Length: 328
Image 1: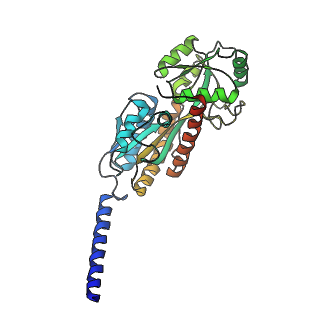
Image 2 (image 1 turned 90 degrees about the vertical axis):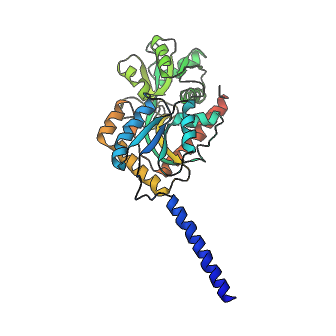
Image 3 (image 1 turned 120 degrees about the vertical axis):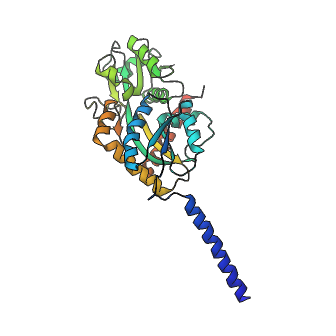
């Protein structure tokens, strides 16, 4: 009897060891990672702001990893297509998604086949471009306080441009209206270009758009920036006051860019990717190119990025509910 128990225990231990060995073999070791090219799906088409930042990160990241990081543009549904592809990929560190704030907002007002918070693990917030409050130069205001006073004196007379219904730019405008007790008219466009065209002509009087989208027009004085929606003043425009300084408490809106990996990706690989992404965005030549687009490198930790993602969902879900914003 005693011998049978011993044999059974040995057999059980052998099975457990075999399972553990198989599991370990299935998970790529951080020290050997990567041994082949890494695919980074980008939640936009080629040529846009997100694609620009993704490619600025991909080049030095390839160098640091010792393997090519292939940028795979998957446009459509505010990045939802890229997210679905990545969520279904093996959690081995060879498929990542480079996303922006737009994907979080999309998931708040749309049903998706994936859950951004369940099916992925945060790697790093790579970069961020604060939103600018810009106005048509012919509008008789130079400060946020003057804009608020004008809007209250002329309810529903001010139009603001966005990049589409339920977009981050749309929610930013609704946040401003609710925070200041003003009534604005939302004019959605399919992308930045058409909205800027109407702003330059005066058909639309104001907008909240990322610095990378509108700062060229601000530099040439075709549009007038009166505040920046960052927590502190930006290096690119140190004389421009923040929305908070201008009397709108807590108003922070950024078009951030970050990296997620499929849920189950080994933590050592996540940590390796975060370290290399941080190095990439803080490299002087990369930082200089990002700055030209009004973007600043971040390189936050997975924990910091996870906390930030949750705060973004909480803020924009509240705004969408208050404004009764629904998907088209």
